[in-house]
Image 1 (cartoon, rainbow, N blue to C red):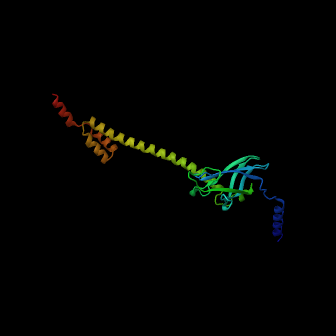
Image 2: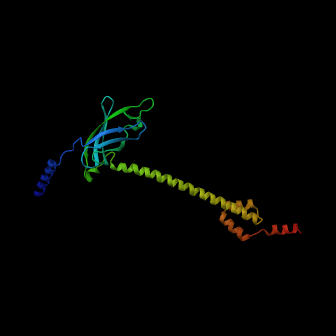
Image 3: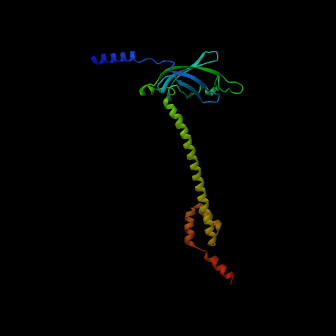
Length: 227
């Protein structure tokens, strides 16, 4: 019972002593989202005297008459020095329908435009609060980076694979050429031995050519012709 009462007293003390978030601590500076952009870029300014390392905010999307269209709450891990402005990315609003922020690039011929309203919810939350689930959480920033790195790695692996294939083709062709040269030097049918190497294996045929050596019948006929 005493422990329960102590918990209530501590909770009330924290609630009374911890100041509420001042909406002016972080201000909305600008937003950019062209009609082709898959991400919107939000600029926020730190108006406090302390460094900001994460922020939670609500974005309300409005049509040009000021009517609410949609809203989304975001959490971001971002470092903003006192008095400084920093940009961060959020998912583009209605990207598939080519929506654009009214101050950003419009689609030739026109596309739907919108405005936004920024509302600060919290900042510098403790780690447990900062990691609460969100439709587009802090982890998504790392996922974007991982995708970028994954693309680089995929391109590297593709280049290595192409080089390996070309190297293998070069070695294979070289072995068949070697079979043809060995057969010719041993006075044997080049076509026959190359075909055998295709059916069997060029390495096997090379070994056989080394073992069988020269065609003695060809040598005897050559000697008789020249005597």
